[in-house]
Length: 246
Picture 1 (cartoon, rainbow, N blue to C red):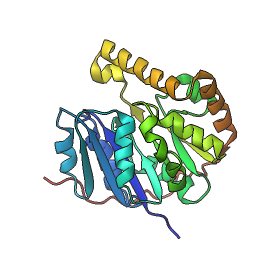
Picture 2 (spheres, rainbow, N blue to C red):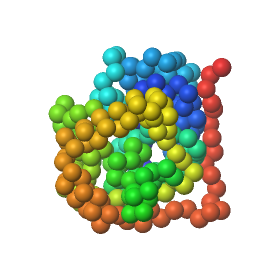
Picture 3 (cartoon, one colour):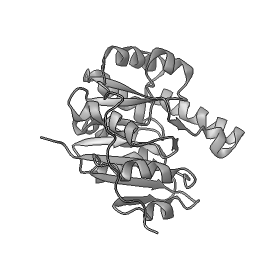
Picture 4 (tube, one colour):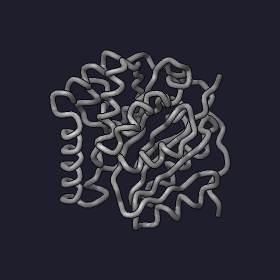
Protein backbone atom coordinates (compact mmCIF):
# COMPACT_ATOMS: atom_id res chain seq x y z
CA UNK A 1 0.00 0.00 0.00
CA UNK A 2 1.31 3.44 -0.93
CA UNK A 3 2.06 5.63 2.09
CA UNK A 4 1.05 9.28 2.07
CA UNK A 5 3.90 11.79 2.26
CA UNK A 6 4.02 15.05 4.21
CA UNK A 7 6.66 17.66 3.41
CA UNK A 8 7.70 20.00 6.24
CA UNK A 9 9.71 23.16 5.57
CA UNK A 10 11.00 25.19 8.55
CA UNK A 11 11.66 28.78 7.48
CA UNK A 12 13.15 31.87 9.06
CA UNK A 13 13.52 35.06 6.96
CA UNK A 14 13.68 33.17 3.66
CA UNK A 15 11.50 35.45 1.53
CA UNK A 16 14.24 35.69 -1.11
CA UNK A 17 14.66 31.93 -1.46
CA UNK A 18 11.56 30.01 -0.44
CA UNK A 19 9.59 30.57 -3.68
CA UNK A 20 11.63 28.17 -5.86
CA UNK A 21 11.64 25.61 -3.04
CA UNK A 22 7.85 25.75 -2.89
CA UNK A 23 7.72 25.43 -6.67
CA UNK A 24 9.60 22.14 -6.43
CA UNK A 25 7.57 20.59 -3.60
CA UNK A 26 4.06 22.08 -3.91
CA UNK A 27 3.84 21.01 -7.56
CA UNK A 28 5.19 17.49 -6.99
CA UNK A 29 2.67 14.68 -7.55
CA UNK A 30 4.23 12.38 -4.94
CA UNK A 31 3.79 14.87 -2.08
CA UNK A 32 0.39 14.76 -0.41
CA UNK A 33 0.71 17.79 1.88
CA UNK A 34 3.16 20.64 2.32
CA UNK A 35 3.53 22.38 5.68
CA UNK A 36 5.68 25.49 6.07
CA UNK A 37 6.50 26.56 9.62
CA UNK A 38 7.40 30.24 9.63
CA UNK A 39 9.62 30.64 12.68
CA UNK A 40 9.03 34.27 13.58
CA UNK A 41 10.16 35.73 10.25
CA UNK A 42 10.17 39.52 9.82
CA UNK A 43 10.80 39.71 6.06
CA UNK A 44 7.55 38.63 4.42
CA UNK A 45 8.25 34.90 4.28
CA UNK A 46 4.75 34.11 5.56
CA UNK A 47 3.10 36.30 2.91
CA UNK A 48 4.89 34.45 0.14
CA UNK A 49 3.93 31.06 1.55
CA UNK A 50 0.30 32.16 1.89
CA UNK A 51 0.19 32.71 -1.88
CA UNK A 52 0.63 29.01 -2.65
CA UNK A 53 -2.57 26.97 -2.98
CA UNK A 54 -2.68 23.85 -0.86
CA UNK A 55 0.32 24.82 1.27
CA UNK A 56 -0.42 24.94 4.99
CA UNK A 57 1.26 27.76 6.91
CA UNK A 58 2.02 27.54 10.62
CA UNK A 59 3.38 30.70 12.24
CA UNK A 60 5.50 30.79 15.39
CA UNK A 61 6.19 34.01 17.26
CA UNK A 62 8.79 34.81 18.43
CA UNK A 63 11.56 32.87 16.69
CA UNK A 64 12.13 29.58 18.53
CA UNK A 65 14.75 27.78 16.44
CA UNK A 66 14.69 24.94 13.95
CA UNK A 67 13.90 22.18 16.46
CA UNK A 68 10.73 23.95 17.64
CA UNK A 69 9.69 24.67 14.05
CA UNK A 70 10.07 21.01 13.12
CA UNK A 71 8.18 19.94 16.22
CA UNK A 72 5.24 22.13 15.20
CA UNK A 73 5.27 20.84 11.65
CA UNK A 74 5.53 17.20 12.65
CA UNK A 75 2.64 17.55 15.11
CA UNK A 76 0.45 18.73 12.22
CA UNK A 77 1.66 16.25 9.58
CA UNK A 78 -0.57 13.34 8.60
CA UNK A 79 1.75 11.36 6.33
CA UNK A 80 3.18 7.91 6.91
CA UNK A 81 6.34 9.22 5.26
CA UNK A 82 7.89 12.54 6.26
CA UNK A 83 10.00 14.77 4.02
CA UNK A 84 12.09 17.50 5.63
CA UNK A 85 13.32 20.27 3.34
CA UNK A 86 15.30 23.41 4.21
CA UNK A 87 13.88 26.67 2.90
CA UNK A 88 17.15 28.11 1.54
CA UNK A 89 17.93 25.63 -1.25
CA UNK A 90 18.94 26.75 -4.74
CA UNK A 91 18.67 24.56 -7.83
CA UNK A 92 16.06 22.22 -6.36
CA UNK A 93 13.76 20.57 -8.88
CA UNK A 94 11.28 17.74 -9.32
CA UNK A 95 14.03 15.25 -10.16
CA UNK A 96 15.87 15.80 -6.90
CA UNK A 97 12.64 15.51 -4.92
CA UNK A 98 11.76 12.23 -6.66
CA UNK A 99 15.22 10.81 -6.05
CA UNK A 100 15.02 11.60 -2.33
CA UNK A 101 11.56 10.08 -1.99
CA UNK A 102 12.24 6.90 -3.94
CA UNK A 103 14.30 4.84 -1.45
CA UNK A 104 11.85 5.39 1.43
CA UNK A 105 8.75 5.03 -0.74
CA UNK A 106 9.97 1.70 -2.12
CA UNK A 107 10.92 0.37 1.31
CA UNK A 108 14.56 0.13 0.31
CA UNK A 109 15.60 2.52 3.12
CA UNK A 110 14.02 3.79 6.33
CA UNK A 111 15.63 7.18 5.73
CA UNK A 112 17.12 8.94 2.73
CA UNK A 113 19.48 11.90 3.08
CA UNK A 114 20.64 14.43 0.50
CA UNK A 115 24.26 15.13 -0.38
CA UNK A 116 24.28 18.64 -1.86
CA UNK A 117 26.84 20.16 -4.21
CA UNK A 118 28.13 22.54 -1.53
CA UNK A 119 28.14 20.13 1.40
CA UNK A 120 31.49 20.40 3.25
CA UNK A 121 34.23 18.76 1.19
CA UNK A 122 34.84 16.17 3.90
CA UNK A 123 31.22 15.02 3.78
CA UNK A 124 31.37 14.75 -0.01
CA UNK A 125 34.64 12.82 0.26
CA UNK A 126 33.24 10.27 2.73
CA UNK A 127 29.91 10.15 0.89
CA UNK A 128 27.48 11.33 3.57
CA UNK A 129 26.29 14.64 5.02
CA UNK A 130 25.19 13.49 8.45
CA UNK A 131 23.61 16.85 9.35
CA UNK A 132 21.73 17.32 6.08
CA UNK A 133 18.39 19.06 6.53
CA UNK A 134 16.86 17.27 3.53
CA UNK A 135 15.53 13.84 4.40
CA UNK A 136 12.67 11.44 3.80
CA UNK A 137 11.94 9.00 6.60
CA UNK A 138 9.28 6.76 8.00
CA UNK A 139 6.78 7.95 10.56
CA UNK A 140 8.06 5.22 12.90
CA UNK A 141 11.51 6.77 12.95
CA UNK A 142 10.09 10.25 13.58
CA UNK A 143 7.92 8.87 16.40
CA UNK A 144 11.10 7.75 18.19
CA UNK A 145 12.27 11.39 18.27
CA UNK A 146 9.07 13.27 19.11
CA UNK A 147 8.95 12.51 22.89
CA UNK A 148 12.39 14.13 23.25
CA UNK A 149 11.74 17.41 21.44
CA UNK A 150 11.40 19.44 24.61
CA UNK A 151 14.93 18.57 25.73
CA UNK A 152 16.63 19.37 22.41
CA UNK A 153 18.39 22.68 21.74
CA UNK A 154 17.55 24.92 18.78
CA UNK A 155 19.72 22.98 16.33
CA UNK A 156 19.92 19.55 17.93
CA UNK A 157 17.31 17.75 15.85
CA UNK A 158 19.36 16.20 13.05
CA UNK A 159 22.03 14.66 15.27
CA UNK A 160 19.43 13.35 17.71
CA UNK A 161 17.54 11.83 14.78
CA UNK A 162 20.81 10.21 13.71
CA UNK A 163 21.12 8.70 17.18
CA UNK A 164 17.70 7.08 16.86
CA UNK A 165 18.48 5.81 13.37
CA UNK A 166 21.78 4.28 14.47
CA UNK A 167 20.18 2.71 17.56
CA UNK A 168 17.48 1.15 15.39
CA UNK A 169 20.04 0.20 12.74
CA UNK A 170 17.80 1.92 10.22
CA UNK A 171 18.80 1.49 6.59
CA UNK A 172 20.01 4.75 5.02
CA UNK A 173 20.16 5.89 1.40
CA UNK A 174 22.45 8.80 0.49
CA UNK A 175 21.05 10.66 -2.54
CA UNK A 176 23.49 12.92 -4.42
CA UNK A 177 22.13 16.34 -5.37
CA UNK A 178 24.93 17.70 -7.59
CA UNK A 179 22.89 20.67 -8.82
CA UNK A 180 21.55 21.81 -5.43
CA UNK A 181 23.16 24.21 -2.99
CA UNK A 182 22.06 25.88 0.22
CA UNK A 183 22.75 29.47 1.15
CA UNK A 184 25.53 29.88 3.71
CA UNK A 185 24.65 31.78 6.88
CA UNK A 186 27.35 34.36 6.15
CA UNK A 187 25.68 35.08 2.82
CA UNK A 188 22.24 35.39 4.38
CA UNK A 189 23.07 37.35 7.52
CA UNK A 190 26.49 38.90 6.89
CA UNK A 191 29.93 37.56 7.79
CA UNK A 192 30.07 37.99 11.56
CA UNK A 193 26.45 37.14 12.24
CA UNK A 194 26.80 34.13 9.96
CA UNK A 195 29.93 32.90 11.74
CA UNK A 196 28.17 33.34 15.09
CA UNK A 197 25.24 31.35 13.76
CA UNK A 198 27.50 28.50 12.63
CA UNK A 199 29.23 28.44 16.01
CA UNK A 200 25.87 28.36 17.78
CA UNK A 201 24.70 25.48 15.59
CA UNK A 202 27.85 23.48 16.34
CA UNK A 203 27.47 24.17 20.06
CA UNK A 204 23.90 22.84 19.95
CA UNK A 205 25.06 19.71 18.15
CA UNK A 206 27.78 19.07 20.73
CA UNK A 207 25.35 19.65 23.60
CA UNK A 208 23.01 17.10 22.06
CA UNK A 209 25.41 14.26 21.34
CA UNK A 210 29.05 15.17 22.01
CA UNK A 211 32.01 15.06 19.58
CA UNK A 212 32.83 11.37 20.04
CA UNK A 213 29.24 10.32 19.49
CA UNK A 214 29.05 12.49 16.38
CA UNK A 215 32.11 10.73 14.98
CA UNK A 216 30.51 7.41 15.83
CA UNK A 217 27.34 8.48 14.02
CA UNK A 218 29.24 9.14 10.82
CA UNK A 219 30.93 5.73 10.96
CA UNK A 220 27.71 3.89 11.80
CA UNK A 221 25.64 5.70 9.18
CA UNK A 222 28.17 4.87 6.49
CA UNK A 223 27.80 1.21 7.43
CA UNK A 224 24.02 1.43 7.28
CA UNK A 225 23.98 2.84 3.75
CA UNK A 226 22.09 1.06 0.98
CA UNK A 227 22.04 1.71 -2.75
CA UNK A 228 19.43 4.42 -3.45
CA UNK A 229 18.72 2.72 -6.81
CA UNK A 230 18.45 5.89 -8.93
CA UNK A 231 16.29 6.04 -12.03
CA UNK A 232 18.06 5.78 -15.38
CA UNK A 233 18.98 9.11 -17.05
CA UNK A 234 16.18 8.80 -19.62
CA UNK A 235 13.44 8.21 -17.03
CA UNK A 236 10.51 10.66 -17.39
CA UNK A 237 10.32 13.54 -14.93
CA UNK A 238 7.11 13.91 -12.89
CA UNK A 239 4.41 16.23 -14.19
CA UNK A 240 4.00 19.55 -12.40
CA UNK A 241 0.82 21.03 -11.02
CA UNK A 242 -0.38 24.62 -10.61
CA UNK A 243 1.78 27.42 -9.23
CA UNK A 244 1.01 30.17 -6.71
CA UNK A 245 -2.01 32.38 -6.75
CA UNK A 246 -1.61 35.75 -8.44
